[in-house]
Image 1 (cartoon, protein in one colour):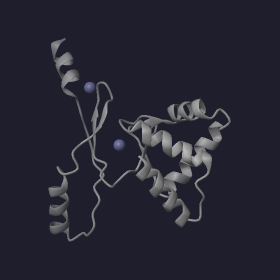
Image 2 (tube, rainbow, N blue to C red; image 1 turned 60 degrees about the vertical axis):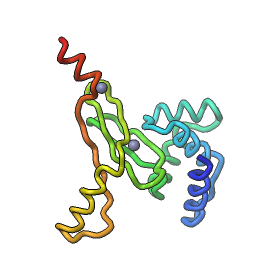
Image 3 (spheres, protein in one colour; image 1 turned 90 degrees about the vertical axis):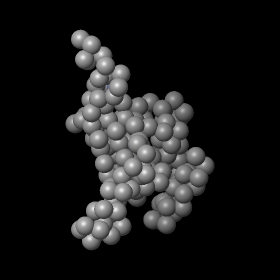
Image 4 (cartoon, rainbow, N blue to C red; image 1 turned 90 degrees about the horizontal axis):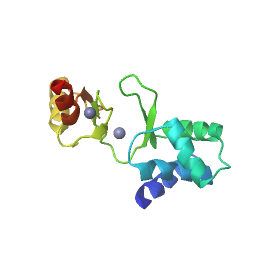
Amino acid sequence: MLGFIESSHELLHKRGYRLTPQRYLIIYVLEEAQGHLSIEEIVECVQQRNPCVSQSTVYRTLELLREVGLVRENHFLGEAATYEAVDGNAHEHLVCRGCHTVLHFDPALPANLREQLEQQYAYRALKLDLVAVGYCDACWKSSSAT
Ligand SMILES: [Zn+2]
Ligand SMILES: [Zn+2]
């Protein structure tokens, strides 16, 4: 956790930005959540800790953090955007259509696929951005029970 905040600080600094208290707070909230938060959830968490931070500040800050690559915006199942801290490169998502749970699956699994793509198409330094959509076990069982 400290590691991510520290590297965020460095990255912002390199791009000529400061790690202001608002930016710190949003990075902290996203990192602590370890998941996918909607903009409303982020605003709520941020304002719980500091009621002075306005919604538009959260929007603007998220936009900046996204630009520098610290925050990732996802659109799963055509829903409203969710945000998460970009901690490391692997971001392979497993999404349930039933309960809308989002998991990060083992990044070692598609490593093979990346190598194969690099070989077959002679592309280098590929980064996969996979979203696998289906039904989790619980949703599958409850839907086939009815
Ligand atoms: Zn994610
Ligand atoms: Zn499910």
